Structures are given as structure tokens and as C-alpha cells.
Amino acid sequence: MQPIRAGYKDHDVWEIPPNGQGIAALVALGILDGLDLPARRDDERGLHLQIEAMKLGFADAHRFVGDPRHVEVPTDALLDPAYHARRRALIHERALPPQAGDPASHGTVYLCAADGEGGMVSFIQSNYMGFGSGVVVPGTGVGLHNRGHNFTLEEGHPNELAPGRRPYHTIIPGFLTREDRAVGPFGVMGGFMQPQGHLQVVVNTLDYGMNPQEALDAPRWQWTGGLTVEVEHALPAQVARALQDRGHDVRVQLESGAFGRGQIIWRDDRGVLTGGSEGRTDGQVAAF
Image (cartoon, helix red, strand yellow):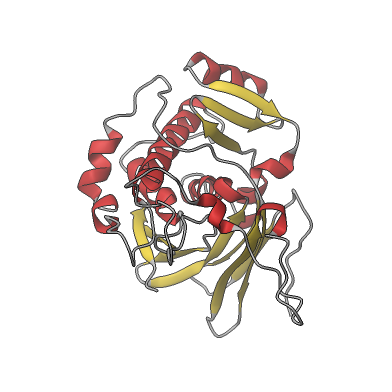
């Protein structure tokens, strides 16, 4: 399986290809790459642009992603900068509702690792809703997933339920490079929050100069369908009201676990490794 990539701020962001949803994050970042974000991370205009780009990324993923062994997924076309420019033109000062599914969160484990010789791993595993199907392979203790839930019954859709097909799935370990050199692995767990978390930690790092822990700890938002955007209670109230004035249906979410859980390792030009682990759940940075 060859990973796919999109350029962002003189870096390359890498994701696994369809039938995964990493392409949603890459389309959104490709759209954002041609926009000037405000200098302040909590400027509502910058958050508005990120949300609108992410909605367009989801709209494309839910429309085109299926099992590439059975349907033609236009991956190259979706990652074409010219296509991103056309999609970018759809973003205005007011919130718009794209056609896409309703994002939600489920049970997944992400971790990343790096060694002193330059080896790096971005790893994610998930049995999905309720931590799987409840079916265990006899004599093994291995539980089976229930990702067939993400098929659609819409006739003719690329992700239509059919024998031997793999469904659209949400598990997407990420990786960042610059000039063909590894910067490091990253990931954010949480079902359909994952590409949204990927976009936010990449923007926090490359646009706002945050270190891995800062990039993870910053208040998050999550588009959940239509014009509805959930924001963490740590987001300043005036910023949430400003998003509301732009047409977003803003809802403050008191449960931080709904906004994903991630880890990051970055390597700087000197070869120094810096890590961050999600403060919204258990986990830590460890060095040996």
C-alpha cells in the first residue's frame, strides 16, 4: 500500500490511501495551502477557513472513497492542486453546508515511536464502535472489528455494501516530511474526528509554530454535519460567538474526549526529537 501526500507550507503531509479517510485531511490541507491564515491561532477567521476546508474534504471523501479493488477512486484528481484551487473558490465569509456524512467518535488506539538512528513509526489500531463486533476468534482472544458499519446502501455509490469489499474506514496514521526528509509521525484518534485533528495539529505546527505538546493541547473544534461545529469549552467565548456570527451553528462541548486523542514526534534540523502526548486522555512521552 503506497501512502498518499499533499503539500502544505513547504512540507509534505502523508496519509494512507483509500479506502481510508486520510484523503479528507489532505484535500482540506491542499485547499488551506492557498489561503492566508491570520497570525493569531485563536482568530475566528482562521478557524472559519479551517472548518470550511475540512467540510469540503469530507464532502469529497464521502462521495468518492470506496474499496479501490472494486471501484475507481479518483485519488490523483482529488489531490491535484488545480482541483484544490477550484474547491478553494467555494469558501466565503459565511458558513456553507456541504453534502457529507455525520462525523462521530469511536474507540481507537494510536501511538508513534522514533529511534536514534532515524527510524520512525506511525501506528494506529481500532476495532471500531463499542470496541468491535463483540465476536472473538475462538482460542485466540482476538476480537473482530465492526467496520462494515461504514458501508452505504446507496445503489451505485463507490462505498456501496457488496461481497468482498472493504468499507470506507476512519483509521489514518499520519506522517510529515520536508524536502524528502522525515520530520515525524503524528495521529489523532476519534473516528471522523481524525482528519479534523490531523488538520488542526499540522496547522498548529506549521502556521503557528507550536511544539508537539502545544499543538495537541490547543483547543479544538469538530464539524459534525450541516452547519454544526462543536468547540471545546477552552475556546474563548468571543471566538465562539464570532464563528456563530459567520453562520456556524456553534455548540460548546464540555466532554474533551469527543475531540480526539493524539501523539506527535517531530525531529528538528539538528536531529533532536520532541514528543507530545494527548492531555485529554491517558498516555505519556517516554524516552529510553
